[in-house]
Image (cartoon, rainbow, N blue to C red; front, side, top):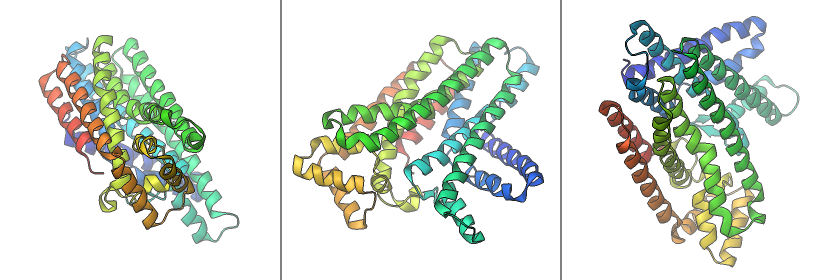
Length: 371
């Protein structure tokens, strides 16, 4: 079986080779298409690969229940296919990041310009007519769509080596569900950013939790686990067990992201300080703050959050309001409670102990991450 470090190298190699091949195809059509490939490839050169690793170890954990363990040839093909499946998940994630940065009007990603900003810069450097901003929007939408298509292509080709039709169907269902749910969650997030000021404050936490569940928790942790398990032929009961492990961990993952988006060190996160506040994100952290503040302070907090044009002093004011309201401490407790729930569910899974130990290490990295 592939060791984790080798897995990451193989994924990066597949992504690089895929982009290299497509670059040649696009360049043959027109040199103007080359930046689409280069910007996509650059984005996929980094990242923690959590989704790939969770899918891989769920596959490893579920192998004893599959029907093809005694077939060495099938086992080899499946080992190669899981690399492509994890590559497809990373391609899908990168596509989601392209669209997410555009929707949030976030200028940076992993310490570098976001894709839409790269297109803006290219437009400006060429001194073309029209708006660089509109060109950036158009370019990033198309690159994101292109990468979504590529992720489906890679995933579909991997399933050509599926052990049987039942496994193929299960994998396709999980992959399709992931795509639908993350788009639903993304749209709910957009709705909340615009509608929150006119909606009941006492329902804000519930709305933020729903966004968090569909935009992040299910797509980032549950879906990779279920796809990996499905490819190994895991039973429905075992897959439900993976959901019990993955969903609370995914919620903790997003809550940690919320904290880092407000209080994270820019040199570590690759994002400006307080970037989530500048973007007006309606996270659980923000919802907990808003429901606690008295009316007068709440109105000021709301006005600043919706302005989308905050200076360092205003960011500091919002950060202090979050701390003073007790929302930060409450969020940290929620992270700990969700982490405990997730790890207890993992402990109960009837899976190989080596795989279980590696899933636990991954979970702890998710919970304790600083970027």
